[in-house]
Length: 182
Image 1 (cartoon, rainbow, N blue to C red):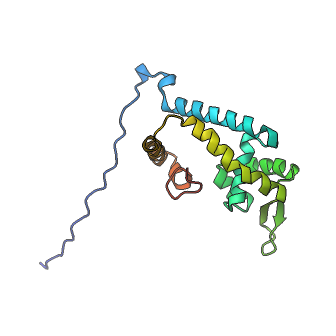
Image 2 (image 1 turned 30 degrees about the vertical axis):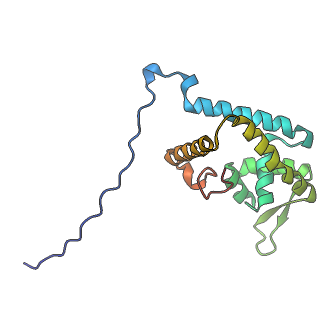
């Protein structure tokens, strides 16, 4: 019987087990991380909307405007992916931005099937102010946090995104090196 070389198998990768932090019998929505994050996001959205009011932009409109300004998406499909919207919703949003004179659709010369989205001068001007506004609103929510707590919070949120069952991690801006890393 010939001798068969046996290469050792690599050790199995450890899959973290999900801790049981919630139980049905004691579940309270106000203690849910999802509920708490929703309150934070709702508060952020409301304050951003309030501060955007003089510019005639809405909370929904700042992200595609900023992404276009930063070069993160030149077509409807790219922009929809980057903003985590379906193509139909992005088209309607772009219709409103175009009606405000902030962007325009330009058919590609190289491929007539492709429609590129470009900011107008007014769109570029509006987009320039967005990072300062967002920084101010988010810094207000982080009042009292130390730099270490801020980094820890981002780390925890990134881990939650990576653990998400829908595999949000591959497209999320919360993942290091991802688009618009927070």
